Image (tube, rainbow, N blue to C red; front, side, top):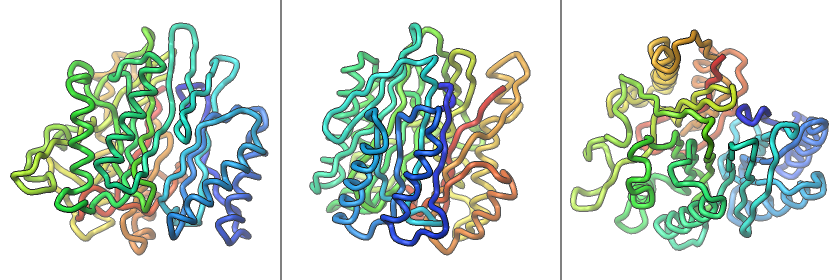
Length: 376
């Protein structure tokens, strides 16, 4: 990761591979070569599996292969979101061992790595709950595990600066309860007023095909850190949405999604903006319904406002050059992939990017984009 003086690399299978297993083994072979001289601490696997059984079998196989490949224990995350160009993509995170000390923390399938440098500490990890008892139960379990890691590491809850929330069947219902709304209700309860003075984390809430609930997080504790929410004047902050855009009946409890559009982060000479999952929303309304190209343009325009000259001028008195670092592009419908990729490439050229098939938190949203902006 950039703020750990490292990197993030997407590893895709070579064209000669066909099956899931072949693609997995090929990606890990490439990883073994890339890993020379670098220290991996986390791997995200984006996988295309057609059943719970195949998902868990692939996860077990990957874990075995990784344990044979790497001597150190690392955080691993298996996300049932099909890549649009293959069946398996690995997102590998590296850090600089000369500058950071690390400690692996585990609780069953859930894990995190604690980094230390002087009086700065960073906790990076993920938790998962897949009880088959519905979104409410999984969300409560997952947040309990997350806050458990935070407490073990002696971090305050509001130290979380970036979060990813993966929800199986995000737009579905458990009885009369809409799953994403239930997630938001529980998140609001867990957060309470912890973020009242600091603003919420930058975050992505996105669907996945199976796996229950996965929460991925970055938390920071340091006297060397400056961090603050970044707003888009063309969008209402998600945590200030009116009830009319929240899913569910009026008589049902509905709380807003507790995240910021973006978050500025400065630490030990590194400056960046975490870009939350961003979609084609102006004010609080969806724009470009049924038009994937228009939605992609509006989404990118929303993102670019988050590191515009006006925003950067408020962040620093010194001139800053913004460089978009990487992106994940989530696409609701496979057939929209070519047109969305065409627009994205027009704006960002050969930027490091992965295209993922995933449901998005509104029925009429066709694309969502996230990433980071490096400031120099």
